Length: 470
Image 1 (cartoon, one colour):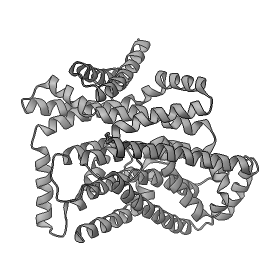
Image 2 (cartoon, rainbow, N blue to C red):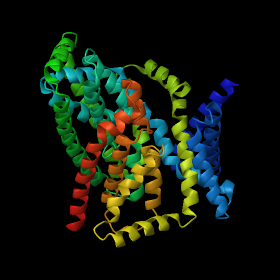
Image 3 (spheres, rainbow, N blue to C red):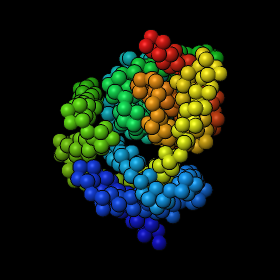
Image 4 (cartoon, rainbow, N blue to C red):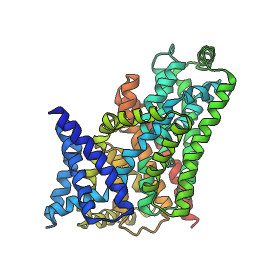
């Protein structure tokens, strides 16, 4: 029975991915119907493999979506089919993007990069800045998998350093780094979905988000400095001792230099190819990114002369790792049905009228003050950043707001950052707590509430100045 469920889930996910990319270029109503059936099968087989308690969010979202369709006298089956197709791009992206991590795990890039730049991270302030910044770069490859990966790496360096002060130092750096990456990293599904859906300029959205992320990184370092003083400890001497111990066993300087250059080349080729093809071919980003990722990964293994290894890793991904995506894919299937149902109602209009009502009674507040709180509040109801961004951007897509789409993207992604930092029921905080053993409340609200308030204020200053200056 277990084999039947597993194979059913594998075939459902694989067929969805293949049909999605095929029908994106060759339109076929019959194949799109089969595509929708594959999405339903993902939901069914993932639900069978899980327990109702663990699968409660997809079931809850699906029931609400179906309930809304019934309430609006819409065709239920057709509504479900259309809802699944509405999420096809994001589901295709989620299936393929994890392939990037294969490349990063083939060579000790992270270790050699840290060893190469060890003179630039020889104080607690510099090391903290390096962790926050580099976590954003690694998130480009590993998404929220960057948190446990970077935590294990930092623990190799700081294996002798224990206690809350060190866990605060490590945990806040990694969580803030990943959270900030959702404002500008092109491979983060929530960011690229909001850019694509709201019709924002990719260049402006990335530069704007990167600027805010850089500011957020600097502020994170300042908070770390104040936190270190409040604990009454000096971290730099112990940090230097641990770094020197690691360097004794590191690769020689030439190998480190080679790995740094190789990593930079990998980053530039992936990032650059996506930009160039998008600019030249005008293909939607959520379609071009997975195609580039597949080709880029294949070329990497070919250049490394590891073709056999590539097929082994690919087989393992299809047989094991791909199924680990089933929960998130099921959430997206359910969200698609919910968004389809909401689009058949006046829900979007009611939401915006409510925001305008608030604005009219509080003239000093506009919609962009309030949008981040929608994302933050939903995050405390177990809806992760991607789910929330899909819901919010899907609603805002049908509206005509009097603001540049890039500012709307910045407003909702800033809400995503704060949701990741504070909510004890979203995946990044749960992953970090599993790694460092601290409570969800401690890793989230206790360590990051003050930082989140300051970050919100700084982003809003920029947004409101942009509006004021026209």
